Length: 496
Length: 122
Image (cartoon, rainbow over all chains, first blue to last red; front, side):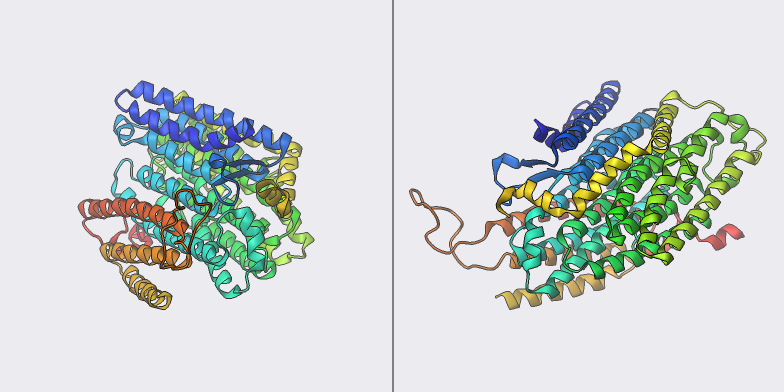
């Protein structure tokens, strides 16, 4: 039964895509199906997480082909947590979308594409096979292309061109690296690769393939210097689309980085970790400085995605168990907070008519409830105690100090400080300043927009106030990542 | 045979990189097509070239009688070709849309999503 939960995490969204496509000409039925399947995915991923927590790593061999010959699904604590959080984000954004998208957007296949995207994301989290991971990446990529251009404005076409071009390069690199690794080892099963890679004599080719994979995943995760596609495109699509992108897409890249660095490329950790550490520091700083120069809600937030990715990569780069605990905790905290901030930006636009900070204002008087809802994720992002971001930053920085990484800790703290600058800029411009036109256009937002925001803000508060159980989950995920033998034995049996 | 293909792949990648550095989106996409073909060939070669029988077990036999061609890279390449085709189809339509809506396929003229700051200051 546990195996079915893992398989359904990828199959349910695919079924949802098919069902919503069939119901294309019946708007209400399509919306109901879309939300129903998203809720079902949430239940399934919760059951999957419970199963992993209770019984350890869940492994499925597709069609009963024994690993490493068939396609393996393998879900450890990290994979289960990511699937769960993806399902929560997906449901929240789809619920928000019911109030946002027009009939025209709906007819542009919003619902089927959203579910294909979720299938790609969840598939990437549950798979245990490198080529299969490539395929799920492509699934989510092609769906994201379609979602990005729904609406068809000039800015969207422009943003989509940049997004497309860099992702095509990343995709080719990923595929080439996969081919080279297959040529070297004769296997693509990740657990089998973990055993085969240390035995490779031709280290030169292996390193070339490893660097290509790091570059490809780095591009997906938007790390320095490969992040330029993100701030070029994330402020252009529908709000619900950009919220899903902001929450999930880059994090799939981070997840893939964590997976290959802890499981497969363990042969030269000093080199990989140093490279990643430099990358993470520069990612944090360039991201946050880029954000400081922006004056539009979603452009500020897009640059903050980049800077926050730096913290996660930093946790991974430290190479210690505590660093990984921090990275996993950060992932969970960040997905919720970031998706929520994008949704709030959408409500702000709904109320004041613009996302340009110059043309916003007066929200604190007109909609104090939105001010509270913004305050929670914004100051969690900046790392204020007792919100979730404080614990995430605390663990990552503590891990850095334990390793005597004073420079990287300093970079992380400076980034946190500059994040406060950006958040107070939004606060001052959009909430405190009087509206340039004198009055705000509307003071009420549709309930379908506010409910998901409130739910996600509640998640942030709960993670912040009751951090202990979440920390326990992150610790177990990190323990599994630092002892890959458990993953390998779970997939391949005791033969290793 | 491997050497010939390796050189061919190298030439393809070189041409692809040259094309992809262009600011013209159409040339970029032609480069991407070359690159994905080069990658597919690389996977094919990585699976070892064996000029021998198809991987079919004869009726009644327990295993392969002789050396056989590796079917896995072919399956991988087939998947990659289909995916590359899908991506290219989308990319071509997007290029056409860029020409229709933005009036250009040159990337340095596409400044709608990120307007240059100098213009804002005026």
